[in-house]
Every structure is written in C-alpha cells, then in structure tokens.
Length: 359
Length: 109
Image 1 (cartoon, rainbow over the protein chains, first blue to last red):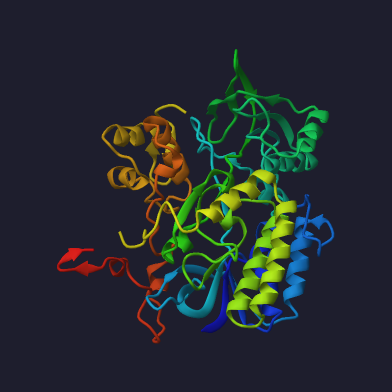
Image 2: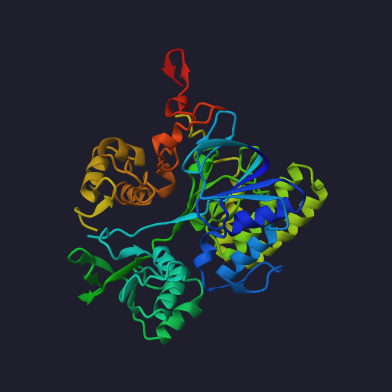
C-alpha cells in the first residue's frame, strides 16, 4: 500500500495533523490500534480548556467526534484495529491487522504515538483493584463498569483530580488523595479546591506502606509523617505521571533528549516538528506531555510542515501559519511545559542518545 | 517499597533482584534485563522501564538523563508467529531481529 502521509496514532494530535494534510489534497492513512478514532479523548468527560481558537470549549469525547467529523470531508483512510509492528529496510511501515502483516510506503510519516501512564510501586501493588487513573477512567466512562466502591488516589496531578471527581460522580467514595510531596502537583488549584470542598482529605508527605487483601485489595496502610493509618478500600488509582511512547521513534532511528518538563526522554525535533530523520515528523504527547489544546496545536504544526515538504503550500505560507500556531502554543500551554519545549528545541543538534538502533 | 515489591509483573522480578544487579555494577535497564529477565514478558518493559530507572537513580545517584532507554526491538508489541509469517507473497516477513545487526569484517559493528 502507498500513501502520501502515514499518521501513526489517531488521537487528538494525529487527527489534527490529518486535517491539515488531507485538507490540502494529500492522501492520508491513519493507523490506530483502537476500534475508534479519537484516542484518549473518547473517555474524557471533563471539559477541555483551553482549546485552540478555532474550537469552542467542549468535553473530550465531543472534541473526538468533532475531529472525526472533520476528516470525513477529505481523503483520509483510517486503519482501525491495526498496529505498527516494525519497519522494513526500505522505510515502509510493517502494519498488522492481526491476520496479516503488510507494508505501507509513505512519503512522510507523522508519529503521534501518545503517552503511557507510569505506575507507582508499593508492596502488593500488582493485586487486582489497583490500577492507573487512566484505567479507572476507561472503566467508568467507556465500559460503564464501576471499578470499586471505596477508593484512594495516589498522586495529585490535574488528571488525577479530574478522575477523582468522575469517580465520585458515579458513586465511588474517594476516601483520600495520597501525595508524597508537601503539596498537590495539580497545576490548576481550582480542581484541588473542588475536592476539598467535597470533603476529600489530602494526605501530604505520605505514601502507601502496604496493600493487603485476599485475591484483591481490601486494606492499605498509609505512612504519614507521624503516624500510620489503615483504610479499607477496594480500589487504588495510581498517578505516576505520564511519559512519551517512544518505540516507533526508536525503530526509525530517531535521536532523543531528556527534558523533565516534557515527561523525560523525548525524540529530538525542530520548530517544524520534524525529527532528525528527514521523513519523520512528531506530534502530540510523544513530543512532550501537555494539555489537549496544546496537543492539537502540535498536530497542526506537524501537518503544516508535512504539507510544505510535499509542496502543497509554499514555505512562506507555512512559516506564517507555524509562527501563529507557535504563538498560540506559548499562550495555551502551561509555562513550565512550554519553556521545557523551547529548551528541548534548542538542544536539537546535541541529542543525549543517538544511533541507538544499531548497537 | 520494600525488597519484596514486584517491579516487573510479567516476569515477577522483585526490587531486591534489581538492586542486586545494580550492586554488581548494573547501570542501565538493559543490564538489569540481561541478568534477571526484567522486562522480557508479554508487556515488553512497558511498565517497568521507568521504575527500574528510578531504582538505578536512587541507588547510584545517576541523574535520569544518564540512564539510557532500553533497546526497543521489533515486533513493537506481541504478535502471533502465524501473523508475522503472513501468507502474503509480495514480501517475505517483517525484518528480523538479526537484520538489526550489521557485520563488518566478521564483527558486529
């Protein structure tokens, strides 16, 4: 199979990149392992804000539907329930539909592989009933399954705060938020205040000493600064932060840098969202963990750069559009993330890890 | 986290086993993997990579940027051999692991 643009990952970044490229007449193929486009947006019932100026504020799943609606007008081929398993020597992607493996040769590849959640290890953390916050959100909003009746949440990022509210909305009693630092890590204090108003206690400088249970979690000990308390729970949601998914970049021979604010190891890329491999572009959380609005902007920039490379727009037009989008990114993204991104760009020519593929 | 805490749930590798590799000079995820099988189960190190890096950081004081990424091989996620050896005739199969290694004058480059 041949295509102009192969987009790996059909979440917000992949879809916004698809809109930018396909709307300029390019033939676009999106590969996604899920059965529906939209990625994590599909189970996000919280309001997405801020979004780029072309979108009015809406909930995550509404945004997913809006993006999917937009690509319908163009020449976009979504390959759902398909995975990338590797690459051929000639640069074609090896795609599987779980029955066959077949090559797709693309002029340009945009990798929007997204982020993976990190777990938090404590004794017995592998017991049933203990999962990441993202997993709990999938259970309640996508599968309509109650993951537990009495929960604690370990970690206090914005995403954890949102998931705590959603758990309460479906009738799970959130007994505590456990945070090892001395304050909540959520950037939007309003979310923390909302939980406090609902009477949810925050245990700071604390961690789970041990979980216990017969076949599934039933009880936990929480180590606090001057005491250990025991709670009965049947659900523990772990929020260990998120990191970019890198395996596709690794296989493509991309170089990597390290930027704490972006989630750790991140592929090297320039202000056009081109990696140090000529035909490979990057978008979304893979280019640094950020908010949904920012992810859309990174997808738009990558899409514009690919359109420029494939000569459907002039370099002058592309530069002008990119400049405007970068300006918006600077306004819309959390300051720490944006400054981490700028630092990462400055180190483009001096990666920490390179030539990893052949060791 | 205590010594018995599982780090790699696929291969049931404990914190103690990871620490032992580090005390014997292990400084990367792949060092730990080669000695213990940590990260070699069905999930292919998708959960334990960051935990092992964190333990290496705590035990040795190396900064996270000094602890390299593990090697990420094909296939990127588990696939049935039957699927990989697909019956299509237009090509043989996905590039094998051996193709990753380039031999120069009888030695791995």
